Length: 367
Image (cartoon, rainbow, N blue to C red):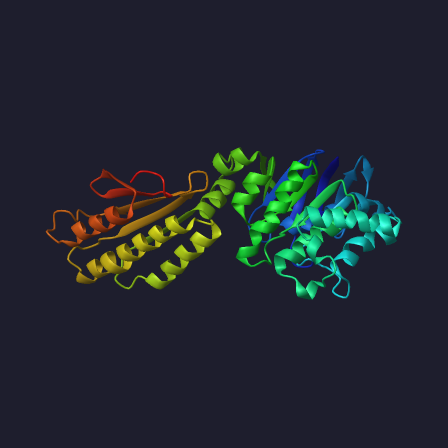
């Protein structure tokens, strides 16, 4: 349906996309992920010709839309775009925002366009707000109105440029639910997102962008579970793993605590699991390990903490290891540490004398 051939995009100080070629098939739902600055949003904007490639070709249904003079309004009838900042007309009601394009661009009958608009507003749960202005809506409501406006143009392809990044966390779910319903309706879609769980569950293909192009292209199962290339592996592991070394009594616990909070938020870890994770990390690091290091009874002692979260199992695994034998020192802090872990954990396994694997599960799983 869409073919990109040797696409390059240069700006004055940076070239985010150096050479990118791919084919997008009808019905594909593609999540576009990767580090900041790798051209994810630029890629979407070029497909809709909001950004013109420096070189290369973009073919839509076999026609090169990059040639000078190509009627871009025809492209944008086929390819709709939903922006992270909504881009609604603030002086118009929700209904007027949705009706405007079909009437003035597609030249539809106003009553027909309004009937279709109300049907779409019902689809996205916004029918009760048809007469409201954007200023009176929450972020999630604005984005759902923006999705209805895009659907009103009857596009064949929908591009979502970080559609939830400007939303309060409590509103993200309502927009993601609408996008998932569109996926089930058979639209061809591309989605730039930093929500890896959503990227994995909604798509049938994933593009990982790096090194100026599509560094890895595969199924969600492959890219998120068994990535083939090193940078993809590092990116995926970094998103789902938090680790630190505690080897000094001056260790910055508050920074670690902030990292744990961010890890919980980023991975949408359920409340009970998140609570246990916070408790274990706080008691271990601030209550036991740092005071133990302050005593200085064991030279060169350090602890490594690695936290991993499984979206599929809704469980956390904490790997705690230390580089000196602390069990034989006679210090009761080792016993205290083990008791704290056992109190909060659902399962604990000592893989050897210096490594513990701690599991935290949702309710319903036997402790």
